[in-house]
Length: 65
Image (tube, rainbow, N blue to C red; front, side, top):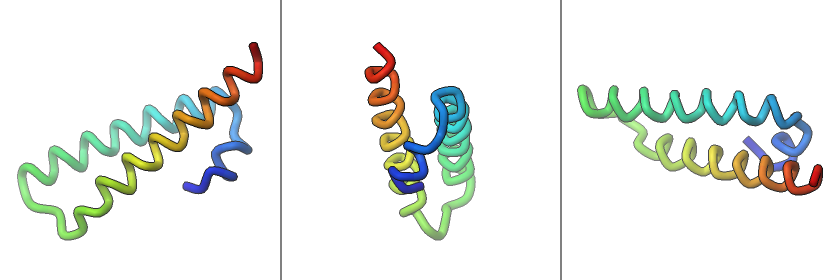
């Protein structure tokens, strides 16, 4: 996800998407423990997406104050 896409989303949508991505990352980790994943770069990509969304969420929440 690009930062510009995250900035277009509402605060509620960002929070929901962050929760979904975190659950997705947990699932990927569990699946990787059982049988190795071919493309391990997806872990880093997902973590970066979550970090981007958290940053944009913090920016939006600070704007409202």
